[in-house]
Image (cartoon, rainbow over all chains, first blue to last red; front, top):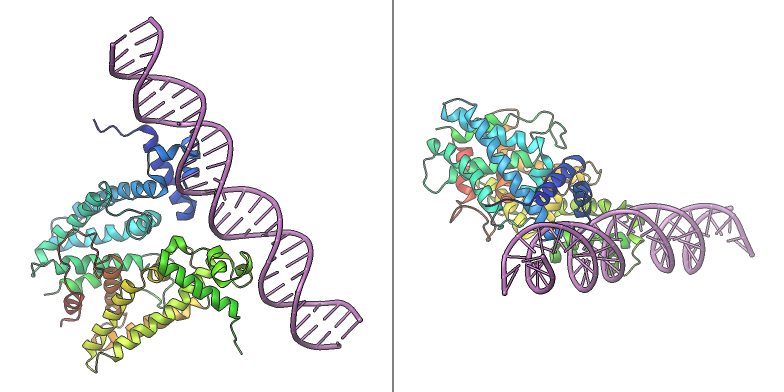
Amino acid sequence: MDETPPLRESLIQAGIALLAEGGTAALTLRQAALRAGVSHAAPAHHFNGLPGLLTAIAARAFDTFAQTLQTARDGAGDDPRARLQGICQGYLTFAATHAGLFHLMFTAPEVDRHDPALAPAAAHSYQILQEACRPFSSHPDGRLEVAVWSMVHGFAALGFSTPTPPRPMTEPPKFADLLDKLLAR
Amino acid sequence: MDETPPLRESLIQAGIALLAEGGTAALTLRQAALRAGVSHAAPAHHFNGLPGLLTAIAARAFDTFAQTLQTARDGAGDDPRARLQGICQGYLTFAATHAGLFHLMFTAPEVDRHDPALAPAAAHSYQILQEACRPFSSHPDGRLEVAVWSMVHGFAALGFSTPTPPRPMTEPPKFADLLDKLLAR
DNA sequence: GCAGGTCCTTGACAGTGTCAAGTTGATCTG
DNA sequence: CAGATCAACTTGACACTGTCAAGGACCTGC
């Protein structure tokens, strides 16, 4: 049926490994091909150039991202607020643990965000957060979801959740306290 | 006194132009040198390689960013809430208008964020937002500032303020409404 | 006049993405 | 079963990138 070619899968895995080890700069087509044990031009037959590989990796990352969010949510119990807190914590943990993938998913300019494999995966991630926001939402235009999503994403992107702080403060506040301000009332 | 060499300035300007025209991929040392009318290796004498040029451009961008925030704040009148709204609007406008610079400033991995020219400029931008949050802050740990900063940054980074939406919704809410939720009570 | 140093050029190198052409091997066709 | 077809992959080349070493031009101070 939808059997993915083994080399395509190997290249994606090699790319993820390269990204985790050496960051964005280390993720090249030729290195991925070398790791997969094929010639330097082989990836062109499975991806549309380097942007294609990056897009495929980002799509894969969105899948595991969605799983991370779900796991964090389900492990947080039954209280709606705890579930939303869990999702946000999963969001921040993923961003800190997989910084390379996180950068690829959201901000790398080479990734085609309209790719038919990536867009649904990204939408699914959003849907998980959206559902968890519903018990607290008072307006129908989704402003609370956007507020929560923006805040947790900005918190992660600005590095407030990472241990190495390039920031003008000693100790950043906990995200949970920030979220409480949004959910109050 | 601190006269910057003219070529260094020309290279920065060339880099900014390249970034605005062709995005991150178009910003190369050799193209910047070509625009400045010098040989391809000349930039190495003014910047520590490509990361050095990118860092210098990011530092310059933070300066104009801070000016943008101040201008937006001062044009919003005397009401503290309007001033904070103005700053956030300036933040979003800058991100949408100078997408390349915005990406460089906050998320490009080549930029050295501990650079002695960049770090103060970035801290100054934060200080402007911090001051505007003070009238609303109830906790001393700066959690409101971080909440506002995270939310406006995430809102911009996720593209809610740009006209081309790769998002699973028809019309995103206004950021002003999101901010009201944070400032309420 | 001339040593020293800054600024820049020239030339080279390894590495990158991408394309064209050729090879191989399996699968389908008559 | 022989031959055509076609996708997967290799080989080789090209332009482009950042970086480095060596050298040249030009000014400054002595």
